[in-house]
Image 1 (cartoon, each protein chain N blue to C red):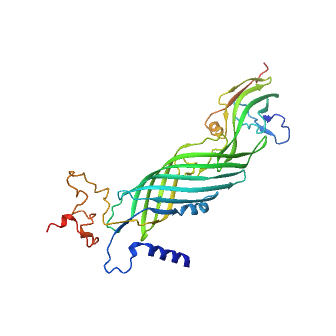
Image 2: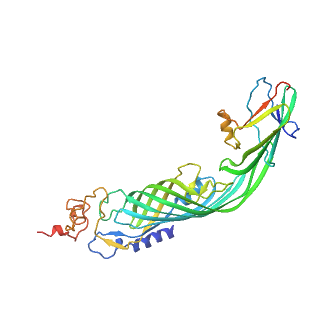
Image 3: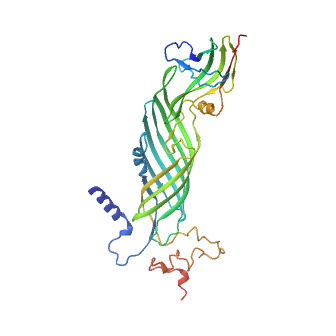
Length: 116
Length: 271
């Protein structure tokens, strides 16, 4: 399960995955009004957090889509139970969804599923 | 309606082709600068979504019969108010280029054109985002972007028709494929419409124009423009009659086309 940091209200859960897969992909939104976005990951009954620092420009995508943020991931930070975070593609924009559909990814978060 | 009919009547009066008191109607070929307006600019706002107003005037001048150096200038104003943003874009544009007639003139009075051409277009415009918003899981971002002066350059390939409906009054249409060459960069707002170029969503924007034009008949001639299709290699320099072919229906002195009465070519004065 993945939830936004400081987002505790009902309905704020971003991902609720009951499957026992050791690897899965999710789309996570980045904050629009701050330069850091935090997430809490719940796995094997344990919770850990990670933060992504980013810059953002608000861009016109098209006449039909309107404006959308274009992010550049610059750093990551994480707590225990997260082994590491690897940034594959720092550019996050509406095209990232297409990349996600074709097996692309922006970051990979490696979790310790067993107690280190 | 009364004004339109009166205007048409005045234009007919201005036309030298509609002369009075001529016992014998003599056919001349008239040439001169042609000025027109693009009617499609008035139609586009009703076809497209954005609140758009525009006008465009066009002018051309015949050169060696089949070449028409062309100038087009216009102004466009877009005010696009959507749920998520309010965008304005306005500016002037110009195009210069040449149309080449690929149609063969059948007679002195034939001025109908089938043409291909090219244009170089440029625009100076400003755009501004008065409001924009984006909402996701984390909240709503609202922003606006101040007015910024922009520029763009592009090329166009043109194909069209132009026919003389009434003496010196032309009506025609053209289709255009456009190629954006360069434009001013804006990190936040890449303009999705450029005055004179149109919408930039497609890599090769297509456009059409519908033109009504009036030709000022400054030049009166009996000389037929040489057809591009029947262009022949030049003969010797001493032969000054190289543009006249007695078997060519384009030759005004060859009376087989029924026009050009009263004129005889030098090659017909041998009897």
